[in-house]
Image (cartoon, rainbow, N blue to C red; front, side, top):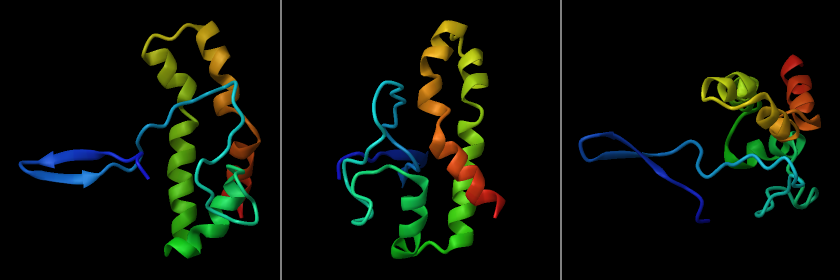
Length: 112
C-alpha cells in the first residue's frame, strides 16, 4: 500500500492524512486496485464499503457518520469547481465522476 500521506500538525508532529491521491476520472470505471470484499471483487461500491466496515473495527453508526462527511464534501464538488475558476464546460466534463449511482446508494444508506 503506497498511496498514503502525512499532514504536518505542528513542530515535529505529523498525522496520517485522511485522504491522499484521490483524483476524479469521469471516463473510467470505478474499480478498486486492492479488493476490500472478496464477494464483490474489484467493485468500488458503497455497499461493499459498508459491509467491510466491521472488519476494520468501524461500527455501522460510525461508518454512517464517515459516509455522511464524505457525501457532504462531494456534494459541493460543482460549487468548489466554480470557486477555483473552472468553466461550466469543464465542470460538465467531470460530472460523471461525481454524479453517479454510488452517490445515490450513499444517500439511501444515510436515510435508513
